[in-house]
Image (cartoon, rainbow, N blue to C red; front, top):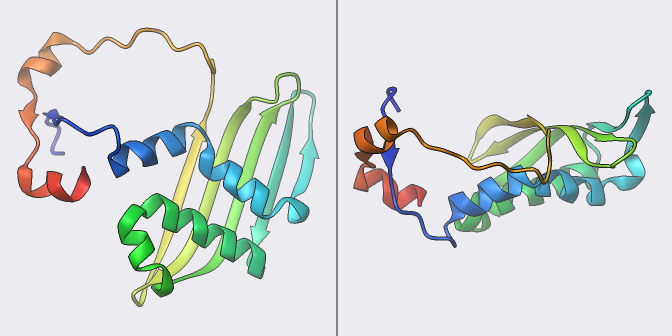
Length: 156
């Protein structure tokens, strides 16, 4: 926010941690893969397979809604009846040799409480299972400000 570093203690059970893990582990993509597996199109090239879907079938919109609700945590569960998914675009690419994901793109068009919105989550994966030490510069840790309490109660 405003090019300022913030620090905040976050519970391991926090919704933001669950959402981040879900996105980093491709859990949402896996959920969609399972939900619409019979409707996926397969493209192949020398190094990868790509599974894709672009449409608004009842199965696809229902699966996309489940993903949105799961990512929204308690608020999503409470407002699930007010979410109406109109379109899903999905593309998932894996390496032919390892079957590790290399790219993922999920785009969901939906209406919630009368407002139209598009949620897009895309990413690329490299060096899976080869995490190296993450060093945070001392200048960042020493200059980080406490996250505003009013916002923290809604986010963490």
